[in-house]
Image 1: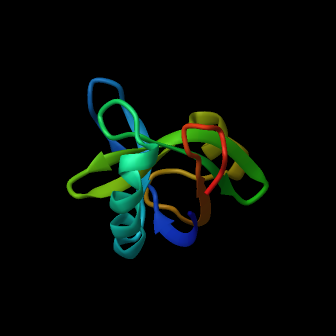
Image 2 (image 1 turned 120 degrees about the horizontal axis):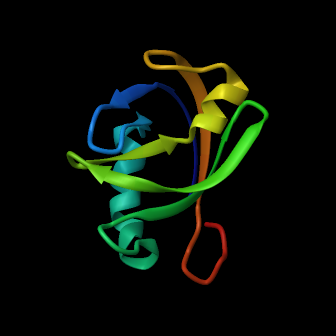
Image 3 (image 1 turned 180 degrees about the vertical axis):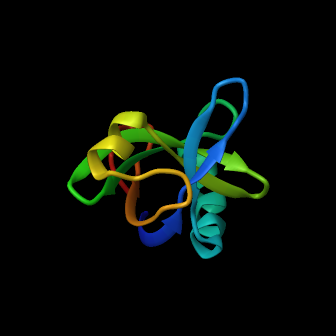
Length: 101
């Protein structure tokens, strides 16, 4: 599964603070179907993500019935993005065999 969307960055002030974007609900519905095949511990889903010229591998977090994409500091800094900024994101889900779907 590949997804391309615009989203606003939000800051989570938990014990390990981090920045995220929420995937659109239609994509989350499709991800819930794929989760049986691709998720690992706590429902995490491995993905390849891209913002602008920056790409990285990470995992989507299940949160409040949706999925959130974590943004590493190096990624945000490379693209000049922070809390409340909007950007265009691309994600591709990876199955356990290493294939991208």
